Image (cartoon, helix red, strand yellow):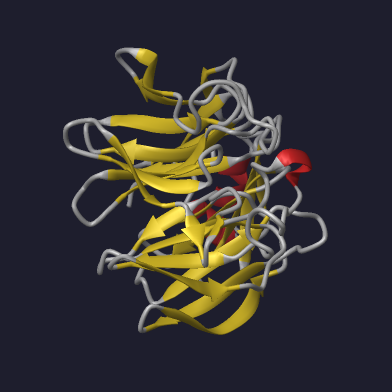
Length: 303
């Protein structure tokens, strides 16, 4: 590690360095800056093309928006379920992951409705899929959309009572699915608690992680004709949300902070946070970080 990097590191108390290449990704003098607080359980961070951040609150059952000018506002009420939670619901019955589909509609995971839904151009919420082989889904957690319009999503039981599978009512496994042209396909059953999902920067691979202590793994799969192939444990770590930057570096939302790995799986560094990190979003030179109750930003290097 060179002297210049050491001098830069002296300015920040929030960065752990495991490899000098971390200085090409993070502003080494930066610290997390809190933007907003008092959320129930923040998830699903997405940068909206309108120039603001969206995120879900699983406990308050809302999608919020954050902008520098307006601060925090409600974007969508009853984002995961209408009314009080039912007997099958855990306290996390709101919406979760949010993305854009191929037609630039917002698509999102709804724990309470056990579904993937879209917000149409006229503001209506439509269910895309909520069952597989005649049984309801568990609680879709996170999702990504491929260039061909395929929606890949994880389906752990976190939105179900006691966060356990209910095979007599819902799915007997916690799978990863592909929705394409009106058909739902199970593409992965390697996890008990699949959570974050993300494409590599070149879209040749897809990463799936677990935040559960008993399965410390981020698995990487090759994508071939919409299916997962050549799966391997790529990073032996837990993570909630997963994101990649344009260079292919992998950002993991983890208990101690945001862990950062190279596209080859080399551990580069970590942004230490005062609480567990649920989800993250990269927009330009800013990393947005969501802990259960607070929203932060962190400065990245110019790309």
